[in-house]
Length: 111
Image (cartoon, rainbow, N blue to C red; front, side, top):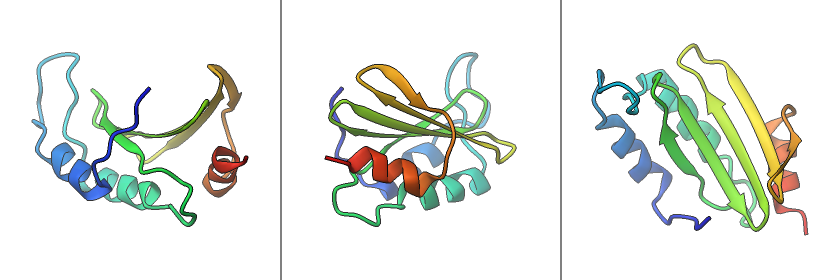
């Protein structure tokens, strides 16, 4: 999977432009509080090896944030009700489904 090169802010602007009530199965514009939370998590790049993540709207108005570095993928899912879920995958296999974001980002950039 190829990593995009759009900044977090450019992606937030695109998410904000989505329709509030889309056709079935299409992504919905997330609420401003969800976008704010997504921006905060996506900008958690306290280390220069952490790639810019992809921000993807979900059909329920949530945001999926995905970091990719080699065979490691880290996803954070923010639901419209402000709940979080994390999923870390290595070589296509789930590695962890919980933990602190800082720890999971450290795992992502380990050599």
